[in-house]
Image (cartoon, rainbow, N blue to C red; front, side, top):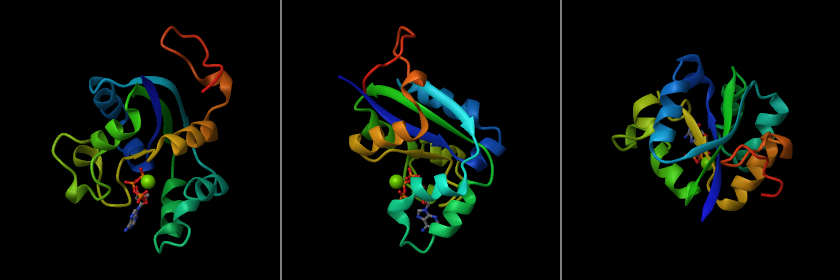
Amino acid sequence: MKSYTLTMIKPQAVKNQNIGNILAMINESGFRITAMKMLVLSNEQAKAFYAVHKERPFYGELVEFMTSGPIIAAVLEKENAVLDYRKLMGATNPADAAEGTIRKNYATDIQSNAVHGSDSDENAKNEINFFFPANELYTKCGKLVSEF
Ligand code: ATP
Ligand code: MG
């Protein structure tokens, strides 16, 4: 069954012009890109997106980093999208990331770790709605997804 996850290509990977390389890894691993945009997160948006980490010591720096330049937000479609994409991303700390993962190839450190991926189907749905209104979400045949 088709399922969905939300990815962000983080500011450092965009600055380093690794957008194309990362999207190629995503497609080569069997994900379809069904929505995508480039934007700079506002302070409020970054704080809200990472609100789950607000008690963590790195929260302030994380918000600063995530607003430091443009990001790519995209919706990825695949069977088992959330877990399969987390496998493709690799460990949060690139020092621990397996060979062949996006973070192994393109992350520079634990904060600048190239990509975000949703951690559950429920969070994927919330994160997709955070970035994309219904008229920006497409199916395989290019039609809008009216309900997700
Ligand atoms: P993401 O949610 O971005 O996909 P993740 O689920 O692998 O990453 P989380 O634990 O949710 O990791 O942390 C969110 C983000 O906060 C990390 O991707 C990283 O950018 C940053 N982060 C996590 N731990 C640290 C840390 N110890 N020091 C600095 N930044 C951190
Ligand atoms: Mg996370």
